[in-house]
Length: 64
Length: 135
Picture 1 (tube, rainbow over the protein chains, first blue to last red):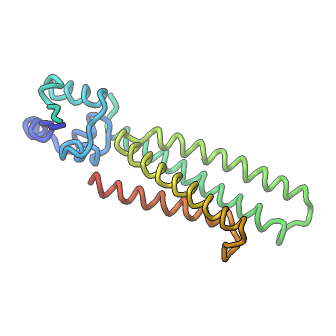
Picture 2 (picture 1 turned 90 degrees about the horizontal axis):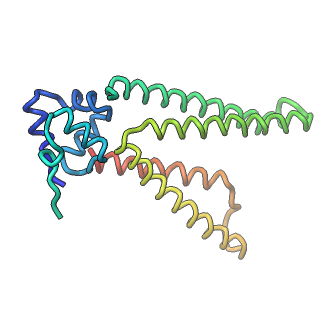
Picture 3 (picture 1 turned 180 degrees about the horizontal axis):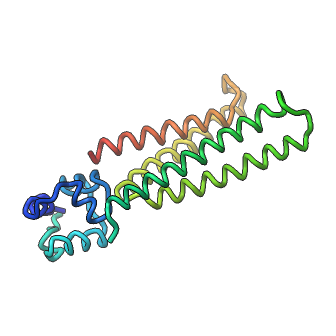
């Protein structure tokens, strides 16, 4: 799954640590999601969408 | 919504709790092992030592459970994979060595402490690999 977390994080001037702080996970998890190494759960995806005020499908793109 | 500060605090707290209970359990293990040899001669004390060992062990298991539940989803996955590998190797290797021992083909005496070391090392190796993988 592709995502725009890094781009949205830059838009809102968040560091990975800030973002981790906001959604209640470790910085390593944010980093792994950004690099596409780990797909977040639905609740975490909703938290990110809520924080960035962007629909989930505007952040994550499914690809085979 | 949880904040990382509280997430970090929670992790720090549960890690500390786990470390404390592990230390207590190790000490109770030493007491139960060496007590009958160096401190007392009464069998009742030995039973009490083993009971203490089991109780502190149960507390350590519960602390570990809580610690795992307090991890975030990626950390939980990393631990789950490490546990799967560790458990698998322990079962397969343990049964393999047991078969050899039954046939008197094992060059050394099988000891559960050996399996504990295997489980610990494979768990640590699994965690290290996963930490690097998701870095």
